[in-house]
Image (cartoon, rainbow, N blue to C red; front, side, top):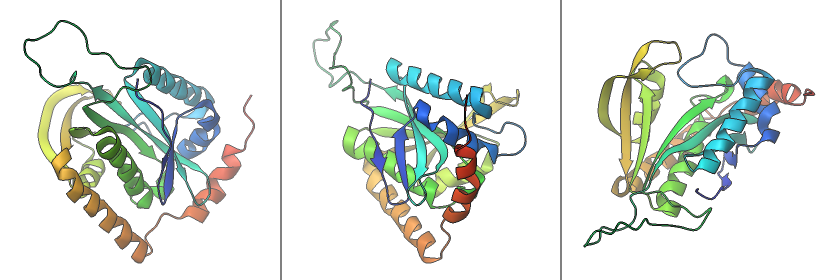
Length: 240
């Protein structure tokens, strides 16, 4: 399994998802109105506890590394994201081929390719610096710490907002896989795939940093004080 890590940014901090995040997840999700969208969001205590339990199980299985997104200004949980579909290419190609498996020490597995997904944010911080800073943290860890060759991002083809956000990062479209899976609404969905390769990362990093600087200069940062006022009372509610 990959080693858990806390990622520190300028706007947000990504913490390995754990039971103590349950109240914050409940508060962040409570601000979301309407039916389920394109990403699983836990509503209520039971769903939040199950969400965290499943995330921890996936981490132990080595298939995902989930994070709570916490804003630095007010220490509020405003959503979640994760590394998923970790792909291991079993080291360099050698000849003659060997049947012996490639092993690594527990907690030290390093993937060759990974996907970033299952991201959701409370409405107060959508489209702002939190998502950009979170993506910068994840991509920096993937490319600079792990040394991955590719990061994949995907979105329901109908989710134009997420697709636009991915494209603004500088990710390259790999096309749309038709009738790829069943969506949360029960419909058979097409899925848009995007990727960033290791040699494209410096350009993408510069692009994200420029966008963060531009948003800060134009005072388009998320309404952090308002977020704190809304979410902190909910997060402090007792849970039995």
